[in-house]
Image (cartoon, rainbow over all chains, first blue to last red):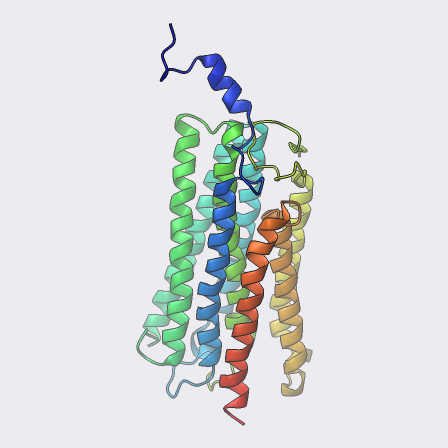
Length: 213
Length: 118
C-alpha cells in the first residue's frame, strides 16, 4: 500500500518528464533569477571599469601600465578564457544529449582552462608586485588590482562550481532533465568571459596616456 | 560533431530554450569559437600594428578595438549564452541593466576625463 509520502517509480518517472513547474512567465524561476543576478553583476563590474577609466592616466608616480604589462602573457590567458567558454557550451550540449563521458571531459576541461587563467593572473600579479606596483602604490595600482582581482575571484568561484558539477557528474551522473543546472553554471561562466573581453580591451589593448616605458 | 536539437523534448526544463527554440549545433559552436579566436587575434594585431601607432591614428585604433570587443561580447551573449534563442524576458533582464551601465559609465568617464579637464 502506498502512503501519502511515498512516490511510486512510475510517478517519479512521470514527474521527471514534466516540464519545469508552471510559472506566470512560462520560464523556470532558477534561470529567471540568474539572469536578474547577471544584470546586477553588470552594474557591479560597470562600476569597477568606470572607476578604472576615470583614474586612467592620473597616477602621479610609477609604475605605469607600459612599465608592467606583459602583452604576450595576457593575450594567451585571454585566449584560454575564451576557449573555456567554448568547452562550456560543449559540456552543456553533452548533458543535453545524455553523453556522460563527454560531459565529464568538457566540464573538467572548462575548469582546467579556468585554473590556467587563474595561474596566468597569479603570475601577472606577482610580476607586477616585483616591479613595484602594489594596491597602495598609485591610482593605477589601486583601480587595476581591485577590478582584475574581483574578476579573478569570480573566475575562482566559477572553477569551484564547475568542479562540483564534475564531481556530481562523476559520482551519480547528471540526467538530461537536470541540464538546467549545468546551463546556469554555463551562464555564469560565459558572463565571467564577457567581463574579461571588456577588461582586456579597455585595460590592456587601448593605450594608456600615462608616462612609462 | 553531433547536432543536438532538444527544443521539443520533454523534461528539459528550460535548458533548450523557453519556448522550445533549438540551440545551435556543436558544429555551429565550433565555428563561433574559431571566429572569436580570429577576432581576438585581430584585436591584438590592431594594438601593435605600426600604421595605427601615430598619435593622430589613435582614435581609429580605439574605435577598431572597441568595435571588435563589442562584436565578441555580442557573439558570446547571443550564441554561447543563448540569449538570441531564449525567451525575450531574459534579454530584457540583461540588456536593460547593461544599457544603463554603459550610459552611466560613459557619463562618468566623460565628466572625469573630458569635461573636468577642459
